[in-house]
Image 1 (tube, rainbow, N blue to C red):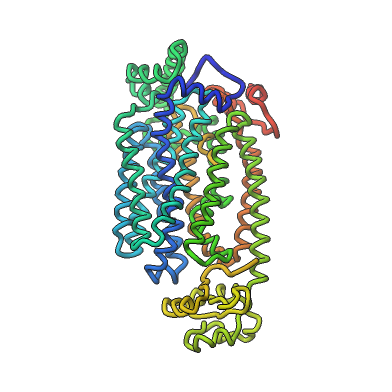
Image 2 (cartoon, rainbow, N blue to C red):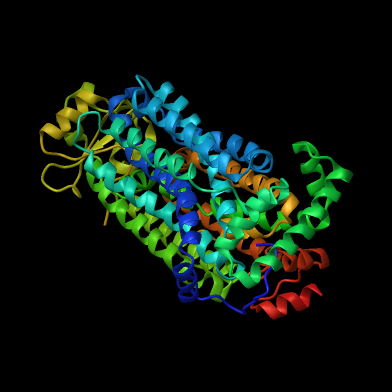
Length: 557
C-alpha cells in the first residue's frame, strides 16, 4: 500500500504464505481478481489450437495467411482499445467495476465466436474478447497490488501471471479434448465464456480497492478493508500515508485537470511519471518483441513448421511449451522478491536470446535437409493435381519440400508413402488433393516439412504515483498491446518472407535491443514502498549490474 511500518530487506515466498495463512482474505482478493489473468491466458492459448480447425472449415482462411493473422490479432487490436480506456475507467469507476465490465465483454465475445457462421463473425467476437482482455490485463494486477502488503506485493501480483499461464495450459487441454468433436473449434472458443462468468459472480461479493475508495472520500469503507489486510498496529500508519497521497493527488488535479487527456499530458510533463513510463513501456514492448505471445498464439503452427503435420500432435507438443511457461511463472513467484524484478528480467532476456538463436539455426538446418520433390511422385497424382509453380519451374530437380511450400499458398507437400524423409510430391493445396494424399496413408504438409514471464506487469503495478497509476498503467498496457498486434499480425507473413529461421533470428535481434533498454531504463523496485520508488525516479536512476535495495535508495538520494 502507500506506506507501512515494516520494510524488510527481502521477501521470501514462505513469508508470503505465512502472511496469507494468517490473513486469507488477501489471497481471496488476489485469486478472484487473478481470474483476469486466466481469461488472458485462455484466449491466448485457445485461438492457437482453434485456428487449426477454423482453417479446415473455411477454405478462405486456409488459403490466405493475412486472414489467419487477422483472426488471431483482432483480439489484440481490441485489447489496445480496452487498455487505452482501461486507465480512465479505473480512475473514474474503480477497479472492481472495470473488471466486471471486462468480464461482460469477454462473455459476449465468446458467445459470438461459438455461433459464428463465417470468419468475419469470428473476427467480430475476437474484437469483443480483446476489449475485455485489454481492460482486465491492466486492472487485475493493479487491484491485486492495492490489496497487498508491500512485503509480498510482487509474489501476489505474480499469482495473476500464474493464472495466466495456467489458463494457457488449460486451453491446450481443452483443445485436445475437443479435437475430434463435431464443431470442435466452436466448443473451444465458447467455453472461454465460463471463467469471466465465475469472476463476475465473485466480484459481486468483493470490495473495491481501498486506495480508490479513500480517493473517493469513502474513508470508512477503505478502513474496513485495510483492517482485513494489515495487522491492527499498521492500519493507522497506512491511513496516514493514504491521506498524504490523496491530498497530493487533489492538489495535482487542481493544477492539471481531471480529464483523461489532461492526465496524459500531465503524466508526460511530470518528471517522476515520465521516467516511470520509460521503464514501464520498455518492459512491455520488450516482452512482446521477444516473440513470447507469438509462440503462444501460433504454438501448434510453429510445431507444424517443425515438421509435425497432425493437428492433434501439434496440440499435444504445444503442451510442453505452455507447461514450461507455467514452471517459469512459478519460479518468478519464488524469486521475484528475493532477487528483484530487474535482475530477473536481464537474466531472462539473455536466456531468450540464446534460445532464439539456437531455434533459428535448427530451422535453417531443417530447411536445408528437407525431403526433395520428385517429378515421378508428383505425377503419380495426375498432372492436374501437381502444383503449377512446380510444373513451370526451370529446374524442378532442385526443389525440396520447403521450396514447394514457399513457392505459393496454392502448393502443398505430400510426403512419401514408404518413408516421409524420402522424395515426395508438390501438389495443389485444395481439399480434394489433400484427401487423395491422405487416402494413400501419406502425410500432408502445408506449413513445415519433415526434418531431423510476469515481471513487466509487476513493475507497472508499482512504479507510478497514485494519481497516475491508472493513466501510467494504461499507457504502458497500450504499448504492450500495440507491440503484440504488430508481432501477431506479421508472424506468418514473416515466416513466408524470411523463413522460420530468419523470423526467429529477427526476434533474437529485437531481444538484444530489449536487453540493453531494460538495463538502461528499468530500475529495481524490489521491496520498496511506493514513496521510495517516487523518490528514486525524481532524483534519477543510474543503472548497475547488481543492486540491492539499500544501493537503490542510496542512488536516489
